[in-house]
Structures are given as C-alpha cells and as structure tokens.
Length: 381
Image (cartoon, rainbow, N blue to C red; front, side, top):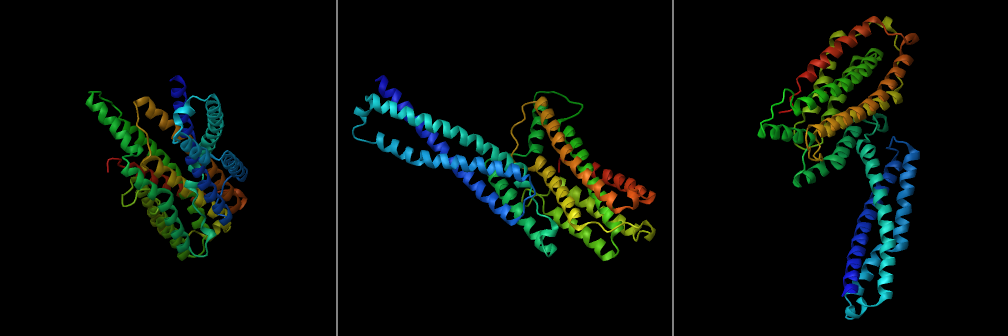
C-alpha cells in the first residue's frame, strides 16, 4: 500500500513538473521569437549584451527541454499509469526508481526554465513594453503614429482588456480601496493614501513635462520656419493621446501631458519668432529623436504605473509607501538619463554652451505653467 501511495505521489509530481515545463518553455520560445523579430527590424534601443544573455539562456533551456523531452515524459507517464498492469507496476522497485529519476530531471529543468522565464518577463516588462520607436525610423510622421497605435494596442490594451475581465485593478483603484477600508474601520487620516499617490503623480508628471519643455524650447529656438514649430507640437499632442493603456477610457495622466503640449504650443506662438541674435545651432535630428523617444517612454511608464490593471492588493499603508518609494526610484534613474542627454544637446546647440537670459526666463515661465497644469490632476475622475 505504501508503495502505491509513493508511486502515485511521484506520478502527480512528475506530471506537475512536466506541465509547468511545457508552459514555461512555450512562453520562452514566444518571447525569443518576438525579441529576435524586433531586433531584426532595428526597433529596439536596449543593452545588446543583456539581450544576448537573455536569448542565450532561453535557448539553452529550450534545448534542455528538447533533450529531456518534457512532453514525451508526460505522455510516457500517462501511458504507464493507464496500463492494465498498473497494480503490478505499483509494486515494482525499478518502476519507482525510474520515476524518481524522471522526477529529478524534470524538476531541475523546470526550475531553470522558471528562473529564465522570470528573467525574460522582467526584461520584457522593462524594455519591450516601453519600446516606442523613434520618429526618424519612418519616412512619414503618420507611419510613426500608426506604429505607435499598434504598439500600444498589442503590448498594452489587448492584455489590459483580459486583465479587466479577470477582475484585476490598477494602482489608483487599489489605493482607493485602501482609503475605503480606512473609513470602514473608522481610521481617520489627515493625508489619505490617494493624496500620497496624487502628490507623487504630480511630482513625476512635472519633472517629465519640464524635460519635454526644455527640449522643445531648444527645438523652437533653432527652428527657422513657424510651420515646422507648429507641426512639432501638433505631432507631440497626437502621439501623447495614443499612449493611454486602457481602450476607451479617459486617462487623467495622459490628459495632463496633452494639456502641457497644448500649453507649450500656445506659449511659443506668443513669443515666436525668437530674436536671430540667439544664434542657436540646428539640433542634431537623430539625437533629438532619441531624446523624444526616451521622454515618451517615461510618459507611458507613468501612465502604466498608475492606470494599468496589474496591481496587487495593498495590505496597509506601509506597503503603499514601499510602492511609492520604488516608483520614485525607478523614475529618478530614467529622468536623470534624459536630463544628461538634454544638457548634452544644449551644450552642442548654444554658443559656448551658454544659455541666453531670455531662454532662462522662458524656462522659468514654462515650469510655472506646467506646475499649474499638473496641480489640476484629479485622481477621482
């Protein structure tokens, strides 16, 4: 009887390992195929060494799965225990020994596959899901806009729809639940959880918007034709509107960024044309488009952080503070990178790298206007 129980448990464990291995290996294969395709199209701006490591580790796991023949193992075990001689087989030591060997092999490979899949999942989340293409990858702006629409639809909205059906919620929704729970247990807070996250969203939104303003100020000063200046802001507003991660839902985050783009357009119309004595060099197009791309990725990152329905439950104020701290850390790193690139562009474009007092005054005015726009953020909308 003991042998039968042991053998039965081993069988269940083997089938579980084989099933997990099948799932992980299929996911890894899908990720690898997608990343190779994006790399071939030249649409990825990532650490190629890291990409190579991820692809190599994934390929190794798939080769191991093939050599261990996970699906064949599963089928073999199913056939074995479907045999008419199953009662006799339970009692054979060699059968138990063989099963233990198979279990060990599958267990080791399944663990490695799970680790690699987790690594690829993280890689996909931090690189692929924010991998907006550059303007200058396309001959026409409309082609870039169409590509961005398709990217958001496939990488974000399609998955978000499934998550919604499964009952998943966004960070903002989880924060509201936390405040509601505080009210239920009569815990009065001077600063609500929603207030804490609103402050963070305003702070990060202002910082991203200020970088956008700095870049477009340089672009505007260096642009000779007013038509080009107007087109720059029209294009910016259009692409920002496409970055909402939930289909047919108004985004409080995206709405603020679009308002910032419209504000910049209005402000520069009033002050343009800038005096010719500024003598700002025309910006390097490739460098400029790379910076725009980085900023659009941070817009999308902020939108996703607050509104994408993949947030776990928040078990108390301490957990919320940890989430808040982690978000600030992630954005600080990315924004520092953008700031460095804008400074490099500024030094290259301005005479001797020195800003004219008129540009400095304009920056202060823009920053003040941007802050006013973000202070109108209402997470209860």
